[in-house]
Image (cartoon, rainbow, N blue to C red; front, side):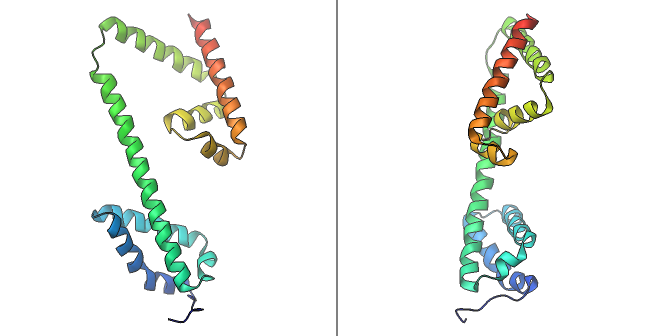
Length: 171
């Protein structure tokens, strides 16, 4: 292979590199379904901006694809761990030994919190959802919303103060 060798078309790139990607994924996981999913994600990313990949030399592109596989695999692994952690929290709450009275008070507080949350704007609800339900960092939320990390933290603090005030008014 020549040093300046590049792929001419996306089809040629896929035809020559799809096995490389799939085999590299298989090094991380022995699960064929996971390998298929990650392979699909990689090729979807490539098709979103093919010119970015077609200008690379083949050796550089192959290394880049390997790095994409590693990063995508780690993202999927972390996401599955977060989901597992959420499930474990729910199970712990469900099977914990609380009294009927404690359960009633907890449910009442959750209902009050939900009512208070409904009084928030859609933007405020979205920020809380991303932060606490999706468990995203302030930095990640800032990138998604196109605002600064500090703005996310300040807004989050103000929303929580607003919720607390609203819940106190309900009692």
